[in-house]
Amino acid sequence: MSAPPPVESLEDVRARHAQRFWKTYDEPAMRNERSECGRGLSAPTESNVISHDHRGAEAPPTFNGYATVASAAHSLPSLVLTHGLLATLALAKARGGALRTLMLEVCRFLCDPERALLPPPSPKQERDDELDPYLRLLTDGNDATSLQLQRATAEALTYLATLKRVAPKAV
Image 1 (tube, rainbow, N blue to C red):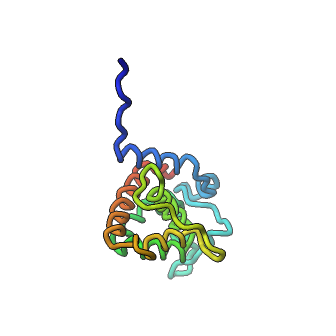
Image 2: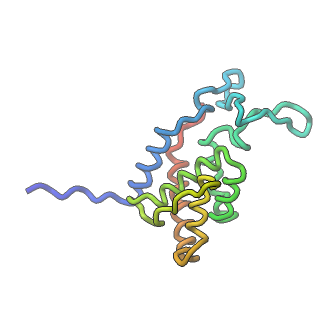
Image 3: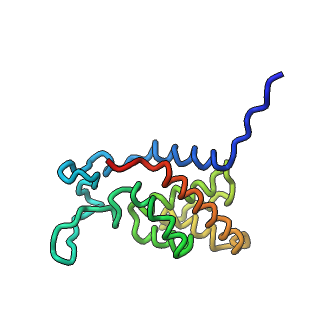
């Protein structure tokens, strides 16, 4: 008689999703690192411009304040804790870049049939950003309750911790 398959824990599901994200994510900054600075900062691209600090010196280029999506993964949990899931989604929608990429991944995880914390989002409408269906899912309709938002926020924080833990290390 064969043994039953091992039961997969929720932490295993989170880790598998996070590893899949980092394996499939294609980040230009990870491929085009500036060798002259030696700190794994991204090379200038259209989406990241060189800014100047308050003394007029050139600051390293970033993706909306983050050198890479991996570095944004380290600060995103504190944003969610400080401002909440809805405000962080709105900020990610407004800023784009690394924050938007990570919040899309979090939303996809929350709606994934394997996790099924949230139902699938409504179809994207004509002028919608990719985050709009997820924002509507958390704010519109009878299913959009404060309890659902609390559960989604708690799971998002846990998943972000997992994303942070398995994020690729900066070179």
